Image (cartoon, rainbow, N blue to C red; front, side, top):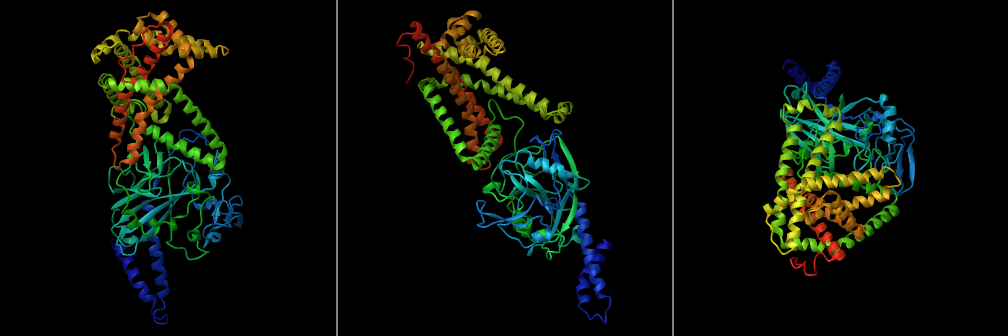
Length: 639
């Protein structure tokens, strides 16, 4: 307290004393210098006290493995003074313009005062990065200092001192790959100077995430501290500053990214060195003259692949308090478990990542991408048209018997809840969680457990629900109206026979495939497995007979059988997740738990469609072969 009062007195009186005539007060310049040094000392002490600690994802030692974070936060000196990183400009301000060199190995002084369309150009291409940037960074990593640039600023008209830490990364290695990346966190003090701020803790913090951010009160449970230093869990590749290790869902709201960002471990830890920077550099000779540069810290490209401008061009630099009024209080965290069937958020993450790859490819070779998508469109249209008749009749039967089929499918929901409970026990609740701590060191263990649980879900659907649907569908074609309990009772009576028969047939096909030359025959054998459930239930066939007669039916139209099966189950698997993704994008403040439940509910309701369609096709092929059903057997169908 005494030291702060003395420093404050010096700061208040120094400008007045310095204005007096030197002959009367010959010591005034020394007092002014002392005041400046005292202020600088207080700034540095404040910056050092809260210098952040970052945790970066590191799964293994392979620098080219994209599951690793390939880039540390480093000083911008890393890209200055290198002949392979020139400062260029475009004659028309666009990426398509002619590029000319401004400086071959630019230093901070060369950047001062330069404006767009000037840009730094790193070795490599951001739209086809490969491992080039990772290898370059790894090669020169030993020369780099791990720093956070501390910017201490009092926004005019406010009485809140803001301490920002700006982090520079060599590459944004996420969905929108671009050279150079700036992220930051900021702390807010009920103070107007560094000296005052040193006397108390911050009131709150904001962690920036791309163009937006998330706030927390100092002392909030979600804010991790190490000896008073804020802990940042850096999102792999995207470098968003996160409070906790998790997978975060961004929907381009309030400045968030679009896609899924992973800040989970295993991690490597880096305690950053704080370097205090001025709000504005004094000139080209200033050590931080690069703060007078408004060009781009990376190659000039279109849209999201464009190199970013620096901190000094951001609203958060000049108006941090005002900017922070629009940040979020929380972020969307992807749950460990999403529900029964295909998880909508996992699908969303994959689609966004794949879509980003397509856009990058389109930027490089548009004709090739258009050609590939044209082929996919034609093939998809053919697939759908080939199975369209069966699909229409399938939905007709489902609509006419929605209560029966819907209730049969809904039996999947309790199974989904049981699996969710098991997964919760495995991944979140002590004392089980510590016993599985090796999952953080060995991600393969976690993946195995997730796949095991997912396989269990699918197995329940295939083993128990499908036979009930096949029985109900066959009875409905005969003009009966079976109940849900009746369908499950008759279906479960033959469950193990179906399972054993199908397993035997698949093993035989795979054994034949091992001979290499037998692969075509093995593929036909696998198509022949499609109707085993129907032959067991409809004809009460034993194992060998069921395998033989299922294959005979499939052989009548193997392509139609395979295509129809694929189309039907794609509809079953994707309708729920796609509708859930629509909810994610269309409805503000949607709870992820509700989104997952809706997806699981739709999956359960639609699951019978696959078995309905394949049972219809089975009866069609059988009746064509031996008139097993007469021409009036479709009377129960509304279509």
